Image (cartoon, rainbow, N blue to C red; front, side, top):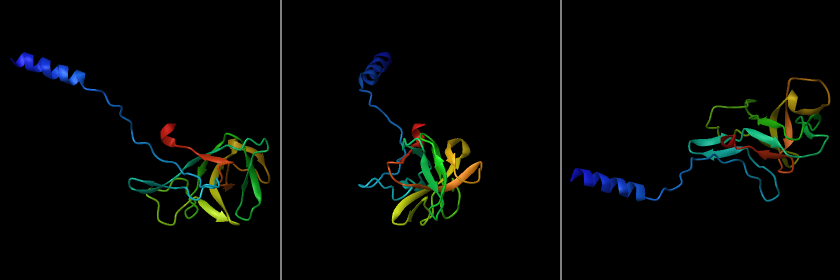
Length: 154
């Protein structure tokens, strides 16, 4: 009798439909209707996190301008480069989550949003001034120039 009950149970288990299971995937920053990224903050299950990586998507051969806060172009970043967000208030690439209420990597300058990034020398298309190993500068926070990278998909 026990053997028959085991066979019945096994048959029921095998007959059950297999439902697809997917892991939880992090969100990325989204542009508004005009293509502007207004924040690099992403709401997670334990507070806000930083959109850490951005892909340079502007295919201009000259590269994307990366400026200082006064608007002077420091370097031009190559198409396809991956740059890291820098939290403006701490000057840190990866602050410990969750982010504090006023922390962000995007700042509005002259009425437009700009993302503060750290650029590796290998990602630089053209240097306009002193050559450095890394640059910290602003890139226009618009979908024409950058796209957020979901690190869970890497």
